[in-house]
Length: 389
Ligand code: SF4
Image (cartoon, rainbow, N blue to C red):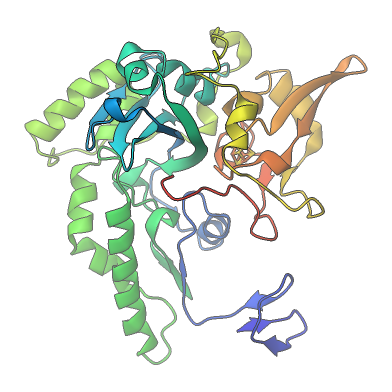
């Protein structure tokens, strides 16, 4: 039921109306705007590790029929990024001559010159990836952040009047790069807990959700995977992989310790003068592409007259911090070219092309002073991915 700010009730929901419910299940996906506010308001992250994220960028290709091997799966990690930067790729053959290719960059990276989009492009030039895509045609492009913190970064799951489920809480199993089954299970547990709460007089918090989670296979699965991602964060790719092997094969996820994340992703970024510049190759237009042609394939659209959904909380911070210290990291980590550092009248300014935003949420996560405010756009604008993405 929609309720206007004046208390008038109506069946339709319109801008400016308030939705009221006895219980709300927040399932907004990674870094959900309402979920973030609720976690802050009810202090749901007290005593847990900071959440860490990855940025997944994906393309779908159509390749010649003679190259297509239905069911073929290939994963990689590390290269072309350095040992201290977590990330990896997948390549799957599926459907009718289709290939899904994607690259995830851990957003705890420190080098301000790094561009997740460029890393994704240049991996395609590796012979083991290029041989699948050469002669093919790129159909779709998109990007989305993933929550990688897992077990030790899960917040308190319930609060008065609602619960967090799926990626709103961060139920992804990172070593498996799978979250659909965990999201579904968390939704089932949340539903059971809420049904119980609604049947109890005077109870407003579905506290049994946490107990149900602790007794489920979901808890066991995430608990056993808990040390893998922090091992990479702590020791880099080579030693992290060695540890992951030992943890999975010898301890089977039951090591008598838990590794922790020590900082948020935005705190990890180093200033430009302490970061090594990276020279990315120019796109060849056949295997590798530029940002503009990529964003076009995401079908992104926002109504022209809607309020801008990306703002700087304090615009005066951009020049002395984002530009002077970090040389505009947002112009590299944004996979849609939304942010451009432009020179005007002998000074630099930030241009925000909000209409290009593919809603990946990376700027909300990675801005060094958390100065970018990502508001939910009006009118269901955003990327328009066809089936298969
Ligand atoms: S503006 Fe932010 S949310 Fe939008 S595509 Fe760029 S980084 Fe992602």
